[in-house]
Length: 88
Image 1 (cartoon, rainbow, N blue to C red):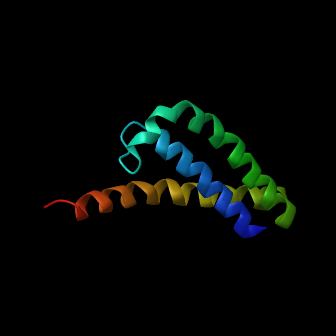
Image 2: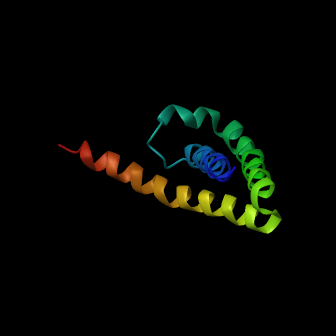
């Protein structure tokens, strides 16, 4: 359940990042920004529930938010790395 919680929280962070106007990982995702933003909160709640089933409420929330924050920090770096590799 721990990995399920972290994976679901990472999906929520990806949805939020892809909805942002400054991302260049998937330029076509901006058209679905509203849907992505609305889907991020239920995914994060599902991540907290998955962690809750394994460890208890507060620990599950902490696991979900840790995975969420890690992905929110890593995605811009991944985007910048991807852009820097394609510079001629």
